[in-house]
Amino acid sequence: PTFGVPGRPQSASNQTAILTGDPAPALVGGHVLGYPNAALRQLLAERSIVRRLKAAGRTATFANAYPAPYLDALGVLRRPSTSPPEFTMPPRAARKVRPSAAKLAFTAGDEPLRTLDDARADDGLTHDITGAYALAHGLSVPQRTPEAAAALFWRISEGADFTFFEHYLADEAGHAQDFTAARAALDTFDAFLRAVAATRPSDARVLVCSDHGNVEDLSVRGHTVHAVPMLYFGPSAPEVASFTSVADVGRAVVRWLGAD
Image 1 (cartoon, one colour):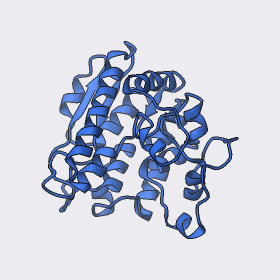
Image 2 (cartoon, rainbow, N blue to C red):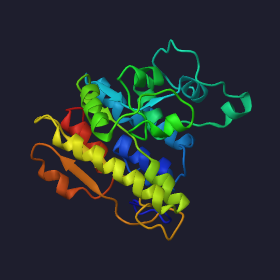
Image 3 (cartoon, helix red, strand yellow):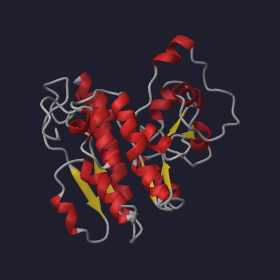
Image 4 (spheres, rainbow, N blue to C red):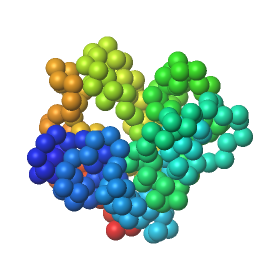
């Protein structure tokens, strides 16, 4: 998970590796925490798998839905929203927020992100899968079972060749060293993934991976250097057994969709 770079893997650089298919930490000379720096932003702008897929005539979509004011503060492309803003971000707070690698990867491909209007229209998922987290923070979204969220994931995927979903509550629980929160996040994701796998169309491929280790060892607050799990559901793909880094996930998506 470290690409031969000393230190512990971090979110920005390893997410960039997944979403470009390139060894991002090695290319930029280190592990980058949280949000992409200038070097990673440039790499995503040039090598985003979303950009490359669309250049090859393929379609891509990000299933996650976010509040429109948050996306506007990030300065990323988003879908139109007709609802009143969920909140108003103070200028100082708006200046501090930064886009994740996934949001930059889709922006590089000129693919607008979903808002909570899409979630309310049954065309977008909240990152916590069920909507409970958003509801607890005063946002108006549907509450779903993990199984209903899986069904919605497949409906969303019908409109694109590549569909991306991002879930990070387990990472937050790991940093907090909170066993109860970790168990809840993993139980929800497990139920969601089981339903996704059970209802997978026969020609669809599902790849599941983590950007780095964390929640598997709650004795430490930071990330680990453990190898991360990678799960594959789909037609026979012997090459998956030879994956050695998270960058292989992005490379596989590009190759399978004929954009390499």
